Amino acid sequence: MNRPDFTRLAPLLFSLGLAACLGPASPAAEPPSTSALPAPSSALPTPLYEFRPGTPDGLGKWFLGREIAHYMSHQGAMWLERPEREDEEQPTKLLDALKLQPGNVIADVGAGSGFLSWRMAKRVGTHGLVYANDIQPEMLAILRTNVTAHGVTNVVTILGTTTDPKLPTNAVDLAIFVDVYHECDHPYEIIRGVAQSLKPGGRLVFVEYRGEEQWIPIKPLHKMTEAQVRKEMALQPLEWVETLHLLPRQHVIIFRRKD
Image: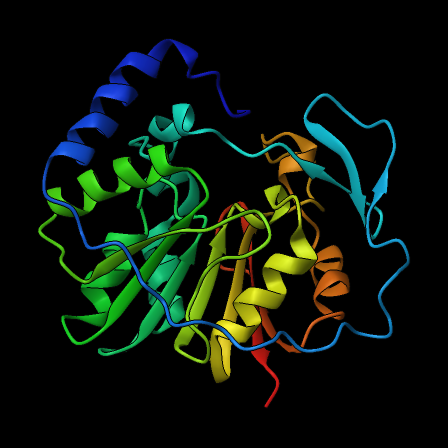
């Protein structure tokens, strides 16, 4: 089914976020200042983005032939925590496939309610770290509540912007976007920032509903084809590693930072 309207649940979500703001919280991240980003690729289109009429689910902003979708607000956080998610998406299988190691540093970009953040934090252990990034303070408040509820202490929240993830440079073993990248309204800039945060050889993983398959019950703009993801990453200092076809509805598309 398509993402539902959670406007009616706004009071509940507000209360949840308020509780997070008033209760224990992980420390706000203070990442070190970043060096200058690498020069843009000579293959970049000019202009980088196009603006033209689109669909009701999109911004009317296009990147390499793809209309960028509206992002999910914090009022939809309950959808991220829905009980049926394990059956529909099999996130445990995804986590197993990522082969996280104790001590790893992970960036959960567009972490939302923290559904995967605290789960990954448990896998990397107390010597590891998860940077949970989002652009909505309200979503990070909900995330902190969920992290605290599961007794996890190695998640650090980062309030990013639409053009800068605010991640530390050369510090991350694996960065992951789960059903998020298609909603980034400055995709080129965000990926440049994330690529810079990766250690040499660090991995960048995209989990996206498969745009090639019409039967998947998600609105078209909230799905992506593998070809489109690889086309967009070709402009970045990244190389494709593999695409895993192990989830019921989503790609797992893995890239590596070029040394």
